[in-house]
Structure formats: structure tokens, C-alpha cells
Length: 78
Image 1 (cartoon, rainbow, N blue to C red):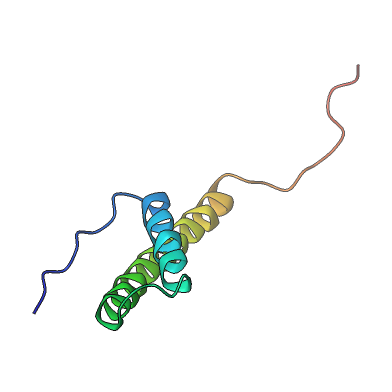
Image 2 (cartoon, rainbow, N blue to C red):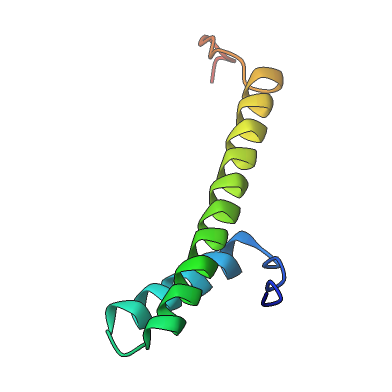
């Protein structure tokens, strides 16, 4: 069994690698074995990106609940 690649350092790095893999696969120049490996890596990168986005969404929701308040107009007279 092949050694699995390391986890990407960031969402942006994972997305960039995923885009590069898709471009290589769409080029149609990869042999079957390399295409399968690229697909496996892409699936892992996609899962990583989805998890990162979910975590970011949850963090925004938490921040909105704790920080954002409804706007109540009628501030200072100028």
C-alpha cells in the first residue's frame, strides 16, 4: 500500500493542489494508474476543503450570535 500524502497546510493550499489535479486529469494525458491516484488524492483534498469550510461556517455563526446585534437607529444628532 502506498504512503498517504501529508495533510495540506491550509485550505488555500489544498484548493490549489485540487485545481492542479483536476487540470491534469482533464488534460487526458495521465496513465490509468496515475489517474486513479490523482482521483484518490483529489477526494482527500475535497474532504479537507469541505471540513475547513464547515469549520469556518460554524465559527461565523458563533461570532454572529455573540457579537452582532440588531441595528437600532437613532444615533447621535449631528
